[in-house]
Length: 112
Length: 115
Image 1: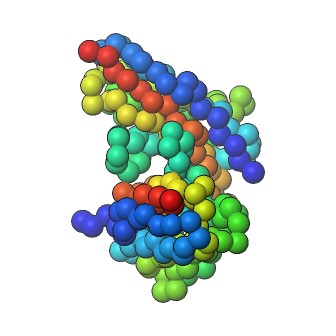
Image 2: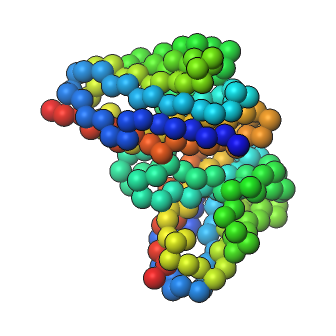
């Protein structure tokens, strides 16, 4: 089955700088890659997703890139703000079974 | 509108007891998922329902775990003979119809503590 690896596990960046979180997946049939943000004590919430027919997607300060050949995808947050501090999870799934597999998460700290 | 609702929010039980965790999905969502999240870990897939049927239960750790969704809406996750290792936050999520065009909407979870 699918296995998703995520790194780093913890990331600290200065406010205003960029943050990058990277994930790899094992199943070449995976074709949907969502990213979730989870603030302390709250539910995970979808922030951006990308499908396998697209190489990059951007939404304001957040962008995601996908390299199908290498089976890795990344989340980029620019101009980081204090409210970006949270745990971020990448995930992967195939349409045929709809079972979304999550990475272990990255705890992002935005330093003042 | 109303999101995914999970009850109870917290449950403390003794080792060996039986517990039931309830999930009310967003109205009209046919797909329902149960995940388990341990401290510092990502959500771990347990089971996925499409309508009333379990489309994939490959994540259930053993036969002490069982889930039902008899009318295709509310779902109950049942854990028999609880063990301390079952302590975690149990997350429920729903989506409109599963598949790529239906993002997951998570509930706030039930924090289960087995003493």
